[in-house]
Length: 304
Image (cartoon, rainbow, N blue to C red):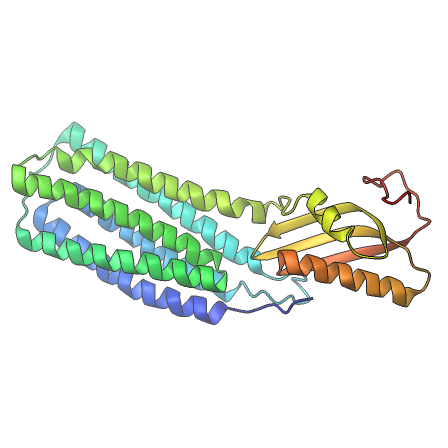
């Protein structure tokens, strides 16, 4: 079986860097929001608070998500990281609610007009540049090391990019045209963007947590039946996420009398599955060629 790679040190390093950058971004947004009185920008600053909280959550989750099994966790600890990704989804939901609440309050009760000058727009350009760097940096490292927490956080940060772009568009409209209602109107599409970002993170991590089928049994059966000495395989089950960690179980009917020959056949089966679905852990129950059972879900090939 292929060795398990522990990438937690790289993940923590990236999360620490992005935490510092997100705190910097949050500080700039709060400052400019207070200067201008912009509701949408202050809501965007609240969104950045969740960015920093997500980084902290990711650091905690990564600390406890060792891929190496131990006595208490024989299947490893990767679900801790999936739980962390779901926490990010929850934070996105909170940000969406706060944005909508602030916009509705402004419509119902009004507020002070937004006042903005060119200096604030330049500061927001810096904010936008930092957010774009963080999003692409996290996504690149997350895909390279196979970290769902980094990929999920990159999606969250990308939603922050769209939020900032929307807010900047509204502030430019106010600065150039004096259209005050843009500050409130653009808060609603911002909330929708945040919601869909959170839903995407939730959708990608639920299969891991609920042990959804990772690989179609027919696909596994097709690969296994190409191995010489295999008569049939049945009771095939799989869980996990391809590319992160997959667990496969099956009953294998082999054409072998000696234990050593049966062992060699199962080793070849494991190698074939590892080549296709690595990283993967496989549990095989070997049965003789004369085995018969009503539970066999595939017909033996070659007249067996």
